[in-house]
Amino acid sequence: MSRSFNSNRYNTMIYRACGRSGLKLPALSLGLWQNFGQEDDSEKARRMVLTAFDAGVTHFDLANNYGPPPGHAETVLGRILQSELGQYRDEMVISTKAGHEMWPGPYGDGGSRKYVLASLDQSLKRMKLDYVDIFYSHCPTPETPLEETLTALVDAVRMGKALYVGISKYPPEQTRRTADFLRKLNVPFIIHQPCYSMLDRAIEKQGLLDTLADLGLGCIPFSPLARGLLTDRYLSGKIPADSRAGKNNPFLTPGMITTEMVAKLNALNNIAKRRGQSLSQMAISWLLRDQRITSVLIGASRPEQITDNLKALSNITFNRDELNQIETILR
Ligand SMILES: NC(=O)c1ccc[n+]([C@@H]2O[C@H](COP(=O)([O-])OP(=O)(O)OC[C@H]3O[C@@H](n4cnc5c(N)ncnc54)[C@H](OP(=O)(O)O)[C@@H]3O)[C@@H](O)[C@H]2O)c1
Image (cartoon, rainbow, N blue to C red; front, side, top):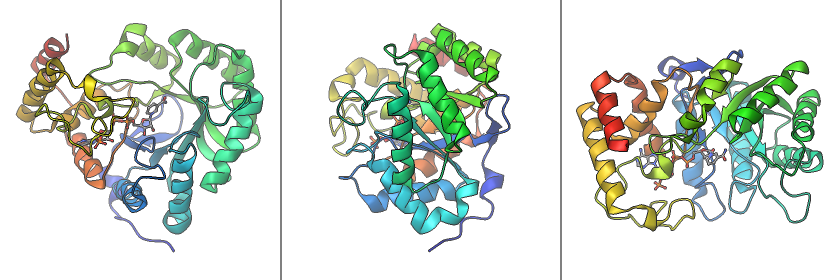
């Protein structure tokens, strides 16, 4: 079965070139890390993907280990592709990754050729795809020679199993080595996926954004809402039971919602209100004001959050006063 989507969807979305490549990505992309596990509501998961696609979100980001159990998010997307999005495959950019632990034993994680290529085959099977658009090395793996991991990415492209390659969480120096190595082999290395939000500015300090601009690479920040902190979820200081922190997620525990954090979020929210935005919309706009950012990679636990976040795109400029006030709060 196939279905139709809003025929205006590509006119309302902003698309930005991914670095100096020919690939354009939507200003907002959807990640399937959380809320696409076996215990999650599969109907809600389906509606999230379809809501995003209907609004011109063409890019869906996965990794081998997204679940739980690991792999389940890819299985869920595979089902949606088969049942409703199959005829739109060429209108979508689907990415996956290998790097973190996926299966037991010495070949189930890291950067070895054996793991990376086996993992990609498994991902393709779960998603019932012949190829992914972007295949990432999910994290630096110091115990593996960088060249071995990169050669596996090269071969994924040569075998037609990936169109482009990317890296995630690599520091600037390794990003440069990666670009040098892959450029010589004419492999389209186009994107970096770092953690970046108003509340996590590490990549600015590292100089990663400048490195990416210099190398002509796209940048797609993950956890742009700081895993849900930069939303209205925690503004009252209470932790909703159905929120990520309420479910005691190891990446956002109740202990992280301190009085100081709640005060900071409310101060940011006051600026957002003056801009006519919600806190999550402002957090997304704040990233997109920088042209070095190709796309902002959000997560969601319900379709309404995606619709809400898309409204950020109608105001992505900030005046000097707003930026100064934000910096003062975050200092
Ligand atoms: N490369 C890597 O190592 C890596 C690591 C992490 C993530 N990622 C990628 O980045 C994607 C996004 O990560 P993330 O889920 O941490 O991103 P995020 O956008 O920072 O957080 C998403 C969470 O924020 C809350 N939220 C979103 N919109 C909202 C709204 N309008 N109102 C209220 N709450 C809202 C929801 O939490 P509630 O559940 O509380 O409703 C949602 O699950 C992942 O899916 C994955 O693709 C990559």
